[in-house]
Image 1 (spheres, each protein chain N blue to C red):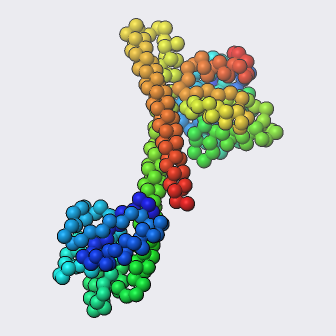
Image 2 (image 1 turned 180 degrees about the horizontal axis):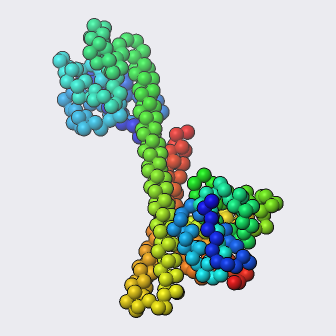
Image 3 (image 1 turned 120 degrees about the horizontal axis):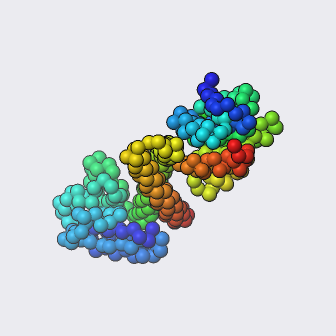
Length: 132
Length: 225
């Protein structure tokens, strides 16, 4: 299982869905430093399995991934009553208005453009799950 | 095909007069220029879309046909002599050879109209193929640029983010190390700004190509009807 829980707090758990290990490490560092617990999955096909296992409070979702892109995964989560309540933040290097509009159409609750700063990522997370 | 250029080469004034009179009566045909074999300037440069060769002075037919039959333009040749006609068909099968029998003028006009129609359609086809090729090249380049931008942005995310985290947590680092981290972060930010300019230019270029191609293809489609 490509998950790696960090920190002792289990109050707020963030699931990172990204096929790039370097970006996962970076987001985990930022989240851990702010007191969140983070887990990750590199294979978007295993997203639901990971949610069932970890029960995250928020999902950070990459867009460009093999086999199943982030928009598609978001749309499927939001169309499933079991997972629809979990906030999803798209994390993407696509920064046009149409990309952001499309993310919203798929049910995304937030959008962070790469490259992002520590504050940009944490600000979006805080706005959806509260401060740690 | 009003833009087509037709040249009639003959040394027989009656042949030229009959053909030109019929030609001018047919408004669908393009402009035509008559030349004798003593005045073939410009023919070698290929300044015509269709050549009609009629009776010429003795022994000049071979050199005239050699001049006009370059392989990329239609040539109609009208001959009186049946033996000569058969020989021409055997020797130069690409040339459209007609006998100068009764009704030959109508036959030449009809054949010329069909040849010009074909020339025009081939030219349009070539333009459309070039436009499609250009669009395909533009699309491939666009996809390549989008891929590069995506990969660079992903790399920059890690460089910028990790530099920022190190600076946030690195109070105990020596000043020189903090300066170096600061430089890494500033340069990465600079690269990010370049990528944003690149992205704007890319979007503008794609929109420009798309608009130009749309206009060109619309024009081709409109003129084809």
